[in-house]
Image (cartoon, rainbow, N blue to C red; front, side):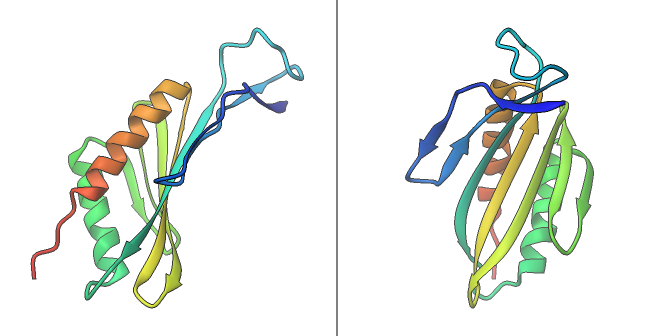
Length: 132
């Protein structure tokens, strides 16, 4: 099997959002293939303030379950879940002190479905509010 790009690449400099779909086929680089896998991701700097990363991850798990994601898991390295044939993975990489790079990745059968699921996940994450 071979990985091949379908040639569509988009970059949003304001949110560090990439869209680079790849196709997985049994033959190398067939140009007429309609099946495959699209991977999209978004990165943002998340400032935790006085809250811990563990609190934020638990809130993400709750939001994903509320939004209908199944198989939601919380590990040391990621929060992940499935919805509509897509797999979403959210990881946090420490930048400085209480700041983290929040990387949200979404893999789906089609590029359009990947973009929609990624946007839905980002909306859910950004709606998290901590009340002190």
